[in-house]
Amino acid sequence: MHHSFRLTALSCAFLTIAGCSNQQMQGLKDSVTTIGKDYGMPVLCGVGIIAGGAAGYALKGNDGALIGAAAGGAIGCALGHAWQSRLQELDRIAKEENLKITTEQLTVASGAIVTAVPKDAGLVTQIEDSGMFSSDSDRLTDSGTRAVTKLAQMYAKPTETDPQAATEQLQTRRLLVVGHSDATGGAAYNQKLSERRARTVGKALVRAGIPSTSIFYQGAGSSRPIADNSDPLVRGQNRRVEIVELANEQALAMRAQAEAGNTKYLQYGTSTTAKPKANSGQTAEASQSKSAPTPVQTTASKTPASPALSAAKQVAKAEPAVDFAGKPAQAYNWTMAQNIRPKSSGFELISSARASEMPMVSCEADMPRNAGAILSMADDKPLQRRATRDYLPGYNNRVWANTVNGHLVTVSPVSILRENAQVDRQPIVQVVKDYDQNSRKAQTIKAVANTYEGESQVLYRVFASDAKTPVSCMDLVFSKGNAKVTEGALYYPAGSEAYMASFMPIPATK
Image 1 (cartoon, rainbow, N blue to C red):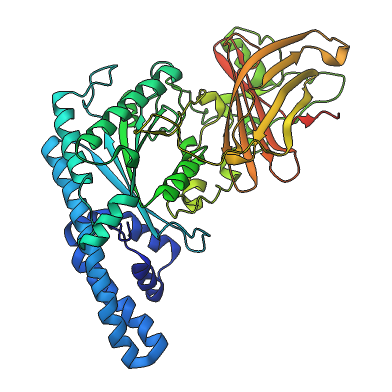
Image 2 (image 1 turned 90 degrees about the vertical axis):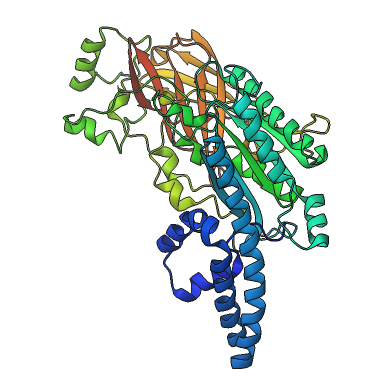
Protein backbone atom coordinates (compact mmCIF):
# COMPACT_ATOMS: atom_id res chain seq x y z
CA MET A 1 0.00 0.00 0.00
CA HIS A 2 2.31 2.71 -1.27
CA HIS A 3 -0.43 5.33 -1.65
CA SER A 4 -2.82 5.05 1.26
CA PHE A 5 -5.30 7.88 0.72
CA ARG A 6 -3.29 10.33 2.76
CA LEU A 7 -1.70 13.75 2.67
CA THR A 8 1.79 12.28 2.44
CA ALA A 9 5.31 13.62 2.68
CA LEU A 10 4.52 15.96 -0.22
CA SER A 11 1.77 17.68 1.72
CA CYS A 12 3.89 17.67 4.87
CA ALA A 13 6.57 19.51 2.93
CA PHE A 14 3.98 22.00 1.70
CA LEU A 15 2.72 22.62 5.22
CA THR A 16 6.26 23.16 6.45
CA ILE A 17 6.95 25.62 3.63
CA ALA A 18 3.76 27.46 4.52
CA GLY A 19 5.06 27.95 8.06
CA CYS A 20 2.10 26.39 9.87
CA SER A 21 2.22 26.01 13.63
CA ASN A 22 1.75 22.60 15.24
CA GLN A 23 -1.78 23.58 16.26
CA GLN A 24 -2.62 24.70 12.72
CA MET A 25 -1.20 21.50 11.28
CA GLN A 26 -3.31 19.44 13.69
CA GLY A 27 -6.40 21.38 12.61
CA LEU A 28 -5.60 20.69 8.97
CA LYS A 29 -5.15 16.98 9.70
CA ASP A 30 -8.51 16.83 11.47
CA SER A 31 -10.27 18.22 8.37
CA VAL A 32 -8.48 15.98 5.87
CA THR A 33 -11.27 13.38 5.63
CA THR A 34 -13.98 15.96 4.94
CA ILE A 35 -11.92 17.62 2.21
CA GLY A 36 -10.63 14.34 0.82
CA LYS A 37 -13.87 12.74 -0.26
CA ASP A 38 -14.87 15.83 -2.28
CA TYR A 39 -11.58 17.32 -3.41
CA GLY A 40 -8.92 14.69 -2.75
CA MET A 41 -7.57 14.52 -6.30
CA PRO A 42 -7.31 18.24 -7.11
CA VAL A 43 -5.96 19.03 -3.64
CA LEU A 44 -3.15 16.51 -3.85
CA CYS A 45 -2.41 17.38 -7.46
CA GLY A 46 -1.89 20.98 -6.36
CA VAL A 47 0.03 20.01 -3.25
CA GLY A 48 2.25 17.74 -5.33
CA ILE A 49 3.02 20.46 -7.84
CA ILE A 50 3.84 23.05 -5.18
CA ALA A 51 5.85 20.71 -2.92
CA GLY A 52 7.67 19.11 -5.86
CA GLY A 53 8.48 22.48 -7.34
CA ALA A 54 9.76 23.80 -4.03
CA ALA A 55 11.95 20.74 -3.49
CA GLY A 56 13.28 20.91 -7.06
CA TYR A 57 14.05 24.61 -6.78
CA ALA A 58 15.98 24.02 -3.55
CA LEU A 59 18.15 21.47 -5.37
CA LYS A 60 18.61 22.88 -8.89
CA GLY A 61 17.04 26.31 -9.10
CA ASN A 62 14.47 27.18 -11.80
CA ASP A 63 15.15 24.11 -13.95
CA GLY A 64 14.78 21.85 -10.93
CA ALA A 65 11.54 23.57 -9.98
CA LEU A 66 9.92 22.68 -13.33
CA ILE A 67 11.04 19.06 -13.15
CA GLY A 68 10.03 18.76 -9.51
CA ALA A 69 6.61 20.30 -10.13
CA ALA A 70 5.89 17.85 -12.94
CA ALA A 71 6.99 14.82 -10.90
CA GLY A 72 5.25 16.03 -7.76
CA GLY A 73 2.05 16.73 -9.65
CA ALA A 74 1.97 13.22 -11.15
CA ILE A 75 2.51 11.57 -7.76
CA GLY A 76 0.03 13.88 -6.04
CA CYS A 77 -2.70 13.21 -8.60
CA ALA A 78 -2.26 9.45 -8.25
CA LEU A 79 -2.41 9.71 -4.48
CA GLY A 80 -5.42 11.99 -4.63
CA HIS A 81 -7.36 9.64 -6.89
CA ALA A 82 -6.86 6.67 -4.55
CA TRP A 83 -7.59 8.71 -1.43
CA GLN A 84 -10.69 10.37 -2.86
CA SER A 85 -12.08 7.12 -4.31
CA ARG A 86 -11.80 5.19 -1.04
CA LEU A 87 -13.36 7.90 1.07
CA GLN A 88 -16.15 8.41 -1.44
CA GLU A 89 -16.96 4.70 -1.35
CA LEU A 90 -17.12 4.73 2.44
CA ASP A 91 -19.31 7.82 2.36
CA ARG A 92 -21.64 6.16 -0.16
CA ILE A 93 -22.01 3.02 1.96
CA ALA A 94 -22.61 5.10 5.08
CA LYS A 95 -25.44 7.01 3.39
CA GLU A 96 -27.03 3.93 1.79
CA GLU A 97 -27.04 1.93 5.00
CA ASN A 98 -27.56 4.83 7.43
CA LEU A 99 -24.28 4.13 9.20
CA LYS A 100 -21.92 6.39 11.10
CA ILE A 101 -18.47 5.79 9.62
CA THR A 102 -15.34 7.70 10.62
CA THR A 103 -11.82 7.34 9.28
CA GLU A 104 -8.29 8.19 10.40
CA GLN A 105 -5.06 7.75 8.50
CA LEU A 106 -2.08 5.94 9.98
CA THR A 107 1.12 7.68 8.93
CA VAL A 108 4.59 6.76 10.13
CA ALA A 109 5.93 9.58 12.28
CA SER A 110 8.81 11.66 11.00
CA GLY A 111 12.07 10.36 12.42
CA ALA A 112 10.64 6.95 13.34
CA ILE A 113 13.09 4.12 12.70
CA VAL A 114 10.80 1.87 10.66
CA THR A 115 12.39 0.52 7.49
CA ALA A 116 9.80 -2.06 6.42
CA VAL A 117 6.70 0.13 6.69
CA PRO A 118 5.89 2.85 4.12
CA LYS A 119 5.14 6.40 5.20
CA ASP A 120 1.43 5.83 4.53
CA ALA A 121 0.88 2.79 6.73
CA GLY A 122 -2.88 2.40 6.61
CA LEU A 123 -6.42 3.61 7.13
CA VAL A 124 -8.53 3.10 10.29
CA THR A 125 -12.29 2.90 9.67
CA GLN A 126 -14.75 2.86 12.58
CA ILE A 127 -18.31 1.70 11.92
CA GLU A 128 -20.73 2.41 14.75
CA ASP A 129 -22.87 -0.65 15.51
CA SER A 130 -26.34 0.77 15.02
CA GLY A 131 -28.21 -2.51 14.73
CA MET A 132 -25.57 -4.38 12.70
CA PHE A 133 -25.77 -7.38 15.02
CA SER A 134 -28.65 -9.05 16.79
CA SER A 135 -28.71 -8.35 20.53
CA ASP A 136 -26.13 -10.43 22.47
CA SER A 137 -25.31 -12.28 19.26
CA ASP A 138 -22.59 -12.46 16.62
CA ARG A 139 -25.23 -12.89 13.93
CA LEU A 140 -25.61 -10.01 11.50
CA THR A 141 -29.03 -8.47 11.03
CA ASP A 142 -30.38 -8.09 7.48
CA SER A 143 -29.20 -4.48 7.35
CA GLY A 144 -25.89 -5.47 8.93
CA THR A 145 -25.39 -8.15 6.28
CA ARG A 146 -25.94 -5.64 3.49
CA ALA A 147 -23.56 -3.11 5.04
CA VAL A 148 -20.78 -5.61 5.76
CA THR A 149 -21.10 -7.14 2.28
CA LYS A 150 -20.66 -3.72 0.67
CA LEU A 151 -17.68 -2.95 2.88
CA ALA A 152 -16.10 -6.31 2.06
CA GLN A 153 -16.53 -5.72 -1.68
CA MET A 154 -14.89 -2.32 -1.32
CA TYR A 155 -11.88 -3.71 0.55
CA ALA A 156 -11.51 -6.47 -2.05
CA LYS A 157 -10.60 -3.79 -4.60
CA PRO A 158 -7.04 -2.44 -4.71
CA THR A 159 -6.50 1.29 -4.50
CA GLU A 160 -3.64 1.13 -6.99
CA THR A 161 -4.53 1.69 -10.65
CA ASP A 162 -1.36 0.17 -12.10
CA PRO A 163 -1.93 -3.63 -12.49
CA GLN A 164 1.49 -4.62 -11.17
CA ALA A 165 1.24 -2.27 -8.19
CA ALA A 166 -2.32 -3.47 -7.51
CA THR A 167 -1.18 -7.11 -7.43
CA GLU A 168 1.69 -6.28 -5.08
CA GLN A 169 -0.64 -4.30 -2.83
CA LEU A 170 -3.14 -7.15 -2.48
CA GLN A 171 -0.34 -9.60 -1.67
CA THR A 172 1.28 -7.53 1.07
CA ARG A 173 -1.79 -5.77 2.52
CA ARG A 174 -3.25 -6.87 5.87
CA LEU A 175 -6.73 -6.20 7.25
CA LEU A 176 -7.41 -6.14 10.99
CA VAL A 177 -11.02 -6.33 12.19
CA VAL A 178 -11.56 -5.30 15.82
CA GLY A 179 -14.84 -5.70 17.69
CA HIS A 180 -15.66 -3.24 20.49
CA SER A 181 -18.48 -3.18 23.05
CA ASP A 182 -19.79 -0.91 25.77
CA ALA A 183 -19.24 -1.80 29.42
CA THR A 184 -22.70 -3.20 30.21
CA GLY A 185 -22.29 -6.83 31.24
CA GLY A 186 -19.15 -8.66 32.27
CA ALA A 187 -15.77 -7.79 30.77
CA ALA A 188 -14.95 -11.41 29.85
CA TYR A 189 -18.33 -11.91 28.17
CA ASN A 190 -18.00 -8.64 26.23
CA GLN A 191 -14.53 -9.59 25.04
CA LYS A 192 -15.64 -12.97 23.68
CA LEU A 193 -18.78 -11.53 22.07
CA SER A 194 -16.80 -8.76 20.37
CA GLU A 195 -14.26 -11.35 19.17
CA ARG A 196 -16.99 -13.47 17.58
CA ARG A 197 -18.47 -10.40 15.91
CA ALA A 198 -15.08 -9.41 14.52
CA ARG A 199 -14.69 -12.93 13.13
CA THR A 200 -18.13 -12.66 11.49
CA VAL A 201 -16.96 -9.55 9.63
CA GLY A 202 -13.72 -11.34 8.76
CA LYS A 203 -15.72 -14.15 7.14
CA ALA A 204 -17.50 -11.59 4.95
CA LEU A 205 -14.10 -10.29 3.80
CA VAL A 206 -13.06 -13.82 2.87
CA ARG A 207 -16.29 -14.36 0.90
CA ALA A 208 -15.50 -11.17 -1.03
CA GLY A 209 -12.31 -12.79 -2.28
CA ILE A 210 -9.70 -11.51 0.18
CA PRO A 211 -7.28 -14.30 1.22
CA SER A 212 -7.84 -15.46 4.80
CA THR A 213 -4.08 -15.21 5.37
CA SER A 214 -4.39 -11.44 4.88
CA ILE A 215 -7.12 -11.00 7.50
CA PHE A 216 -6.78 -10.83 11.29
CA TYR A 217 -9.41 -10.21 13.94
CA GLN A 218 -9.55 -9.22 17.61
CA GLY A 219 -12.13 -8.80 20.35
CA ALA A 220 -11.29 -5.70 22.39
CA GLY A 221 -14.54 -5.83 24.38
CA SER A 222 -15.04 -2.72 26.50
CA SER A 223 -11.30 -2.11 27.02
CA ARG A 224 -11.02 0.80 24.55
CA PRO A 225 -13.90 3.21 25.21
CA ILE A 226 -14.39 6.31 23.10
CA ALA A 227 -17.45 7.57 25.02
CA ASP A 228 -18.67 7.74 28.63
CA ASN A 229 -19.91 4.31 29.70
CA SER A 230 -21.78 5.81 32.66
CA ASP A 231 -24.02 7.84 30.34
CA PRO A 232 -26.76 5.67 28.71
CA LEU A 233 -27.24 8.31 26.01
CA VAL A 234 -23.70 8.07 24.61
CA ARG A 235 -22.22 4.73 25.69
CA GLY A 236 -23.67 3.10 22.55
CA GLN A 237 -20.87 4.83 20.63
CA ASN A 238 -18.50 2.27 22.16
CA ARG A 239 -20.30 -0.52 20.28
CA ARG A 240 -18.44 -0.45 17.01
CA VAL A 241 -16.53 -2.47 14.45
CA GLU A 242 -13.10 -1.23 13.43
CA ILE A 243 -11.48 -2.23 10.14
CA VAL A 244 -7.82 -1.28 9.83
CA GLU A 245 -6.30 -1.54 6.34
CA LEU A 246 -2.52 -1.84 6.73
CA ALA A 247 0.35 -1.74 4.27
CA ASN A 248 1.95 -5.01 5.41
CA GLU A 249 2.37 -7.33 8.38
CA GLN A 250 5.03 -5.10 9.94
CA ALA A 251 2.50 -2.26 9.99
CA LEU A 252 0.01 -4.67 11.59
CA ALA A 253 2.50 -5.43 14.37
CA MET A 254 3.06 -1.68 14.86
CA ARG A 255 -0.68 -1.13 15.16
CA ALA A 256 -1.04 -3.93 17.70
CA GLN A 257 1.73 -2.48 19.84
CA ALA A 258 0.34 1.06 19.58
CA GLU A 259 -3.08 -0.03 20.88
CA ALA A 260 -1.86 -2.27 23.71
CA GLY A 261 -2.04 -0.22 26.91
CA ASN A 262 -2.64 3.01 24.98
CA THR A 263 -3.12 5.86 27.46
CA LYS A 264 -5.64 7.59 25.19
CA TYR A 265 -8.27 5.05 26.27
CA LEU A 266 -8.02 6.35 29.84
CA GLN A 267 -10.13 9.32 28.83
CA TYR A 268 -13.24 7.28 29.69
CA GLY A 269 -13.71 4.57 32.28
CA THR A 270 -15.39 1.20 31.87
CA SER A 271 -17.71 1.64 34.85
CA THR A 272 -21.41 2.10 34.03
CA THR A 273 -22.03 3.82 37.38
CA ALA A 274 -22.05 7.61 37.19
CA LYS A 275 -19.57 9.18 39.61
CA PRO A 276 -20.57 12.35 41.54
CA LYS A 277 -18.78 15.52 40.58
CA ALA A 278 -16.69 17.49 43.04
CA ASN A 279 -18.59 20.05 45.12
CA SER A 280 -17.98 23.51 43.67
CA GLY A 281 -18.33 24.97 47.19
CA GLN A 282 -15.68 22.72 48.73
CA THR A 283 -13.40 23.95 51.48
CA ALA A 284 -9.91 25.28 50.80
CA GLU A 285 -8.49 22.08 52.27
CA ALA A 286 -10.49 19.95 49.84
CA SER A 287 -9.52 22.23 46.96
CA GLN A 288 -5.84 21.85 47.82
CA SER A 289 -6.24 18.08 47.74
CA LYS A 290 -6.67 18.29 43.98
CA SER A 291 -2.98 18.87 43.48
CA ALA A 292 -1.59 17.49 46.73
CA PRO A 293 -3.03 14.20 47.98
CA THR A 294 -2.73 13.31 51.64
CA PRO A 295 0.87 12.23 52.42
CA VAL A 296 1.58 8.65 53.44
CA GLN A 297 1.65 8.27 57.22
CA THR A 298 4.52 6.23 58.58
CA THR A 299 4.44 7.35 62.21
CA ALA A 300 3.04 5.28 65.06
CA SER A 301 0.09 7.61 65.71
CA LYS A 302 -2.87 7.83 63.35
CA THR A 303 -3.88 11.12 61.77
CA PRO A 304 -7.13 12.45 63.20
CA ALA A 305 -9.94 12.77 60.68
CA SER A 306 -10.38 16.22 59.18
CA PRO A 307 -13.67 18.14 59.57
CA ALA A 308 -14.42 17.60 55.86
CA LEU A 309 -13.89 13.84 56.25
CA SER A 310 -16.02 13.71 59.42
CA ALA A 311 -18.87 15.52 57.68
CA ALA A 312 -18.66 13.14 54.74
CA LYS A 313 -18.79 10.15 57.08
CA GLN A 314 -21.90 11.50 58.75
CA VAL A 315 -23.59 11.72 55.36
CA ALA A 316 -22.48 8.22 54.41
CA LYS A 317 -23.51 6.92 57.87
CA ALA A 318 -20.82 4.27 57.67
CA GLU A 319 -17.25 3.83 58.82
CA PRO A 320 -14.64 2.33 56.48
CA ALA A 321 -13.41 -1.17 57.28
CA VAL A 322 -9.94 0.35 57.51
CA ASP A 323 -9.55 4.11 58.00
CA PHE A 324 -6.75 5.35 55.73
CA ALA A 325 -7.51 9.01 56.65
CA GLY A 326 -8.13 9.97 53.05
CA LYS A 327 -10.24 12.55 51.25
CA PRO A 328 -13.61 12.04 49.54
CA ALA A 329 -12.82 10.78 46.05
CA GLN A 330 -15.23 13.26 44.48
CA ALA A 331 -13.11 16.13 45.83
CA TYR A 332 -9.92 14.80 44.22
CA ASN A 333 -9.00 15.76 40.66
CA TRP A 334 -7.11 12.73 39.34
CA THR A 335 -4.31 13.88 37.03
CA MET A 336 -1.72 11.10 37.23
CA ALA A 337 -1.91 9.84 33.64
CA GLN A 338 -1.66 13.38 32.33
CA ASN A 339 1.92 13.41 33.59
CA ILE A 340 2.77 10.27 31.60
CA ARG A 341 4.19 11.07 28.18
CA PRO A 342 2.65 8.50 25.80
CA LYS A 343 5.07 5.97 24.38
CA SER A 344 6.06 6.58 20.78
CA SER A 345 4.25 4.08 18.56
CA GLY A 346 5.90 5.05 15.29
CA PHE A 347 2.60 6.56 14.10
CA GLU A 348 1.70 10.23 13.96
CA LEU A 349 -1.83 9.33 15.07
CA ILE A 350 -0.70 8.80 18.68
CA SER A 351 -0.37 12.43 19.69
CA SER A 352 1.15 13.38 23.03
CA ALA A 353 -0.35 16.85 22.64
CA ARG A 354 -3.85 15.41 22.47
CA ALA A 355 -3.23 13.02 25.33
CA SER A 356 -2.13 15.79 27.68
CA GLU A 357 -5.44 17.57 27.17
CA MET A 358 -7.61 14.58 28.06
CA PRO A 359 -9.73 14.63 31.24
CA MET A 360 -8.66 11.14 32.27
CA VAL A 361 -10.42 9.08 34.93
CA SER A 362 -9.08 7.31 38.01
CA CYS A 363 -9.36 3.61 38.82
CA GLU A 364 -12.37 4.43 40.99
CA ALA A 365 -14.31 5.30 37.81
CA ASP A 366 -12.92 2.30 35.96
CA MET A 367 -13.07 -1.50 35.97
CA PRO A 368 -10.65 -4.23 34.83
CA ARG A 369 -10.14 -4.24 31.08
CA ASN A 370 -9.76 -7.32 28.92
CA ALA A 371 -8.64 -7.23 25.28
CA GLY A 372 -8.14 -10.46 23.37
CA ALA A 373 -5.24 -11.53 21.18
CA ILE A 374 -5.01 -10.70 17.47
CA LEU A 375 -5.97 -13.90 15.63
CA SER A 376 -5.57 -15.02 12.01
CA MET A 377 -8.66 -15.79 9.95
CA ALA A 378 -6.67 -18.58 8.30
CA ASP A 379 -6.26 -20.75 11.40
CA ASP A 380 -7.53 -18.73 14.40
CA LYS A 381 -4.01 -18.65 15.81
CA PRO A 382 -2.43 -15.53 17.38
CA LEU A 383 -0.40 -13.13 15.28
CA GLN A 384 3.17 -14.37 15.21
CA ARG A 385 5.38 -12.04 17.17
CA ARG A 386 8.73 -12.39 18.87
CA ALA A 387 7.54 -12.78 22.44
CA THR A 388 9.89 -11.95 25.28
CA ARG A 389 9.71 -12.84 28.95
CA ASP A 390 12.16 -10.15 30.00
CA TYR A 391 11.01 -7.86 32.79
CA LEU A 392 11.35 -4.14 33.17
CA PRO A 393 14.28 -3.60 35.58
CA GLY A 394 13.08 -3.85 39.17
CA TYR A 395 9.63 -5.23 38.32
CA ASN A 396 10.40 -8.94 38.29
CA ASN A 397 7.85 -10.22 40.83
CA ARG A 398 8.91 -8.03 43.74
CA VAL A 399 6.89 -7.10 46.83
CA TRP A 400 5.92 -3.43 47.20
CA ALA A 401 4.58 -2.07 50.50
CA ASN A 402 4.16 0.92 52.79
CA THR A 403 2.01 2.08 55.68
CA VAL A 404 -0.98 4.38 55.25
CA ASN A 405 -2.24 5.96 58.48
CA GLY A 406 -0.65 3.15 60.48
CA HIS A 407 -2.00 0.29 58.32
CA LEU A 408 0.36 -1.80 56.17
CA VAL A 409 -0.64 -2.21 52.52
CA THR A 410 1.27 -4.69 50.35
CA VAL A 411 1.06 -5.34 46.59
CA SER A 412 2.81 -8.44 45.27
CA PRO A 413 4.07 -9.62 42.96
CA VAL A 414 4.55 -6.53 40.82
CA SER A 415 5.37 -8.25 37.56
CA ILE A 416 5.79 -6.06 34.44
CA LEU A 417 7.29 -7.29 31.16
CA ARG A 418 9.43 -5.17 28.85
CA GLU A 419 7.13 -5.78 25.88
CA ASN A 420 4.28 -3.24 26.04
CA ALA A 421 4.70 -3.20 29.86
CA GLN A 422 2.34 -6.17 30.06
CA VAL A 423 1.39 -7.74 33.39
CA ASP A 424 3.01 -11.16 33.65
CA ARG A 425 1.53 -12.32 36.97
CA GLN A 426 -1.56 -10.87 38.59
CA PRO A 427 -0.97 -9.40 42.06
CA ILE A 428 -2.65 -9.82 45.41
CA VAL A 429 -3.15 -7.02 47.92
CA GLN A 430 -2.68 -7.52 51.65
CA VAL A 431 -3.82 -5.13 54.37
CA VAL A 432 -2.59 -5.38 57.96
CA LYS A 433 -4.83 -3.18 60.08
CA ASP A 434 -3.12 -1.37 62.98
CA TYR A 435 0.32 -2.49 61.86
CA ASP A 436 1.80 0.39 63.88
CA GLN A 437 0.37 -1.25 67.00
CA ASN A 438 2.19 -4.53 66.27
CA SER A 439 -0.81 -6.23 64.66
CA ARG A 440 0.25 -8.90 62.16
CA LYS A 441 -3.14 -10.20 61.06
CA ALA A 442 -3.32 -9.72 57.30
CA GLN A 443 -6.37 -9.63 55.06
CA THR A 444 -5.60 -10.96 51.58
CA ILE A 445 -7.40 -9.50 48.56
CA LYS A 446 -7.31 -11.10 45.12
CA ALA A 447 -6.72 -8.47 42.43
CA VAL A 448 -6.49 -7.78 38.72
CA ALA A 449 -3.98 -5.31 37.26
CA ASN A 450 -3.95 -3.35 33.99
CA THR A 451 -0.97 -1.36 32.71
CA TYR A 452 -0.62 1.70 30.48
CA GLU A 453 2.86 2.45 29.16
CA GLY A 454 4.48 5.81 28.59
CA GLU A 455 7.99 6.70 27.45
CA SER A 456 9.48 6.71 30.94
CA GLN A 457 6.62 5.66 33.23
CA VAL A 458 3.97 2.96 33.58
CA LEU A 459 0.54 3.39 35.13
CA TYR A 460 -0.13 0.22 37.13
CA ARG A 461 -3.87 0.05 37.92
CA VAL A 462 -5.02 -2.56 40.44
CA PHE A 463 -8.62 -3.64 41.08
CA ALA A 464 -9.87 -5.76 44.00
CA SER A 465 -11.73 -8.81 42.68
CA ASP A 466 -14.22 -8.66 45.58
CA ALA A 467 -16.25 -5.51 46.17
CA LYS A 468 -16.39 -6.04 49.95
CA THR A 469 -12.76 -5.30 50.77
CA PRO A 470 -10.98 -2.48 52.65
CA VAL A 471 -9.29 -1.35 49.38
CA SER A 472 -11.27 -1.12 46.14
CA CYS A 473 -8.52 -0.12 43.72
CA MET A 474 -5.22 1.72 43.40
CA ASP A 475 -3.27 3.71 40.83
CA LEU A 476 0.52 3.51 40.94
CA VAL A 477 2.83 5.33 38.55
CA PHE A 478 6.09 3.38 38.26
CA SER A 479 9.29 4.79 36.85
CA LYS A 480 10.78 2.58 34.12
CA GLY A 481 14.30 3.76 34.89
CA ASN A 482 14.87 3.26 38.61
CA ALA A 483 12.12 1.04 40.07
CA LYS A 484 10.22 3.50 42.21
CA VAL A 485 6.71 4.92 42.56
CA THR A 486 6.49 8.57 41.51
CA GLU A 487 2.76 8.96 42.27
CA GLY A 488 0.26 6.68 43.95
CA ALA A 489 -3.24 6.57 45.38
CA LEU A 490 -5.51 3.93 46.85
CA TYR A 491 -9.29 4.12 46.96
CA TYR A 492 -11.43 2.60 49.68
CA PRO A 493 -15.16 2.46 50.47
CA ALA A 494 -17.07 3.84 53.43
CA GLY A 495 -20.70 2.94 52.99
CA SER A 496 -21.81 4.33 49.64
CA GLU A 497 -18.94 6.82 49.47
CA ALA A 498 -15.44 6.39 48.03
CA TYR A 499 -12.31 7.90 49.57
CA MET A 500 -8.78 8.39 48.32
CA ALA A 501 -5.49 8.31 50.22
CA SER A 502 -1.95 8.74 48.95
CA PHE A 503 -0.08 5.43 48.70
CA MET A 504 3.62 5.40 47.82
CA PRO A 505 4.87 1.81 48.23
CA ILE A 506 8.55 0.93 48.17
CA PRO A 507 10.11 -2.39 47.04
CA ALA A 508 10.88 -4.82 49.82
CA THR A 509 14.57 -5.67 50.26
CA LYS A 510 15.57 -9.20 49.39
